[in-house]
Length: 594
Image 1 (spheres, rainbow, N blue to C red):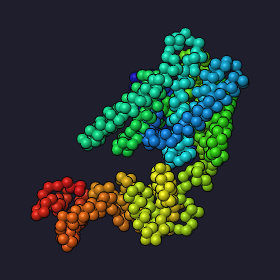
Image 2 (image 1 turned 30 degrees about the vertical axis):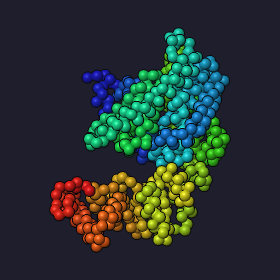
Image 3 (image 1 turned 45 degrees about the horizontal axis):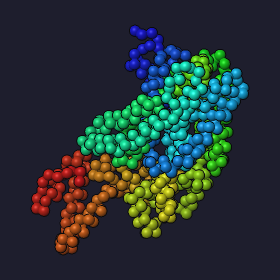
Image 4 (image 1 turned 120 degrees about the vertical axis):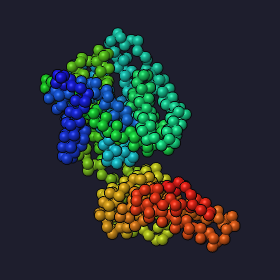
């Protein structure tokens, strides 16, 4: 039996997950978020308190895959065209933030401590970076990642990841360690970065897309999961081999596949791994927190953490005002990005290797970063009022509100893609007031160019539906694609708004069978009527009489209706095969999902 803190992987995993479960549930219940729960669980279970689990550094290496997977998922949500639109925020606002915050913090360290200028730069510049692993999940869970506020925060975080390369170069240039003299120069690392990104784009187009097309044709979900993880690991491994940011590699791989048909499947496959590994990352950070360093200099650690938060908040707030953000949003952005980041640990280790700082200083500033990360959930609670929907349309996509809907709407249309546009225009042609809701900001902007007012939001959420006037609506029409709604959610919506008739767009017969017990007025297959219309036109063009066309349509609709009723009774697509029309004068086998 091993000593305390030296148990098997199974033993350590059991303890880590157990403590995480308790602390995260507790902190979620208190409204403090999961991150703080993971951090405190790591502190308690780690070597500095109970000592039940050790080797935090080894677990951190595994857990950093969580950050890699997070950046891959974010990349999937951003097409290259969207990134090009964000270039000013990434290379403009992001560059100014890293430089201004880094130099300001370094100046304070140099001016008020005994560290040399080189050591102050090696400590201050890494502290300019924020926690991607903490901020992005907060933006995703609040539904703000695709808003202008969220996109600006993401742009800054993305540039921070890019800045790892020049920051490592700066520390290497300041190094007093003779072993660093043979390291690659900065221009060479920059060339590696450009070459690696170009290589990933080429691999995505000529290797990965054909691979996913092949796997998709086989219908093997397990192979899709393997291929998804292979893609992330491969991109990260390439960057690591070149001495670059693994998270950047995963992000580029996501961007390459963002406009592919496999985007949603990739997101679904990677999501469970991302969540658990991100949790493990924060557990490891908590385990690495050096409580003895804090105990020796508690005033310095607490003061430095507060100074870091205050300086970064102030600098980012001023940058926000310069780029014409509302002062409330600029202040909220400053507080959101005020903590130190996970890459600080990496850069402190680089500075230690370069003989710029001592090991105990690295531990001390690691504790400062961790403490600053622990304050973020509290800061977000304090600034919740700052992050409410602003009145300015330019600052944030407008969500449905009582003021905006004061004229009232008889129907809510959720989803304004090609299907929802037809539904909404038909209703408005019938003089029915309609409220339009969609989550895609590009769709909202494009609709605005044509004069349509579409509100931003997740139309499957009860709170947003209530805010949009669902309590007074006669109908709620869900025109979103895929199978985003299940029977349980529709029961919740019907219970909350019983006066509203629910209409749901279904992908195919399977979707209709899955919703057979849902409290809906109608479930409509998204392509059936257009297919019937095409068949009608073809029959007429081939000289079939109008009466014969009507009989053919009635025969088809009767067959479809009878099969669907039988299938809803059994829940099986195989039921009613004998009713499939397979030839002009007889029955035979056919695709039961048609």
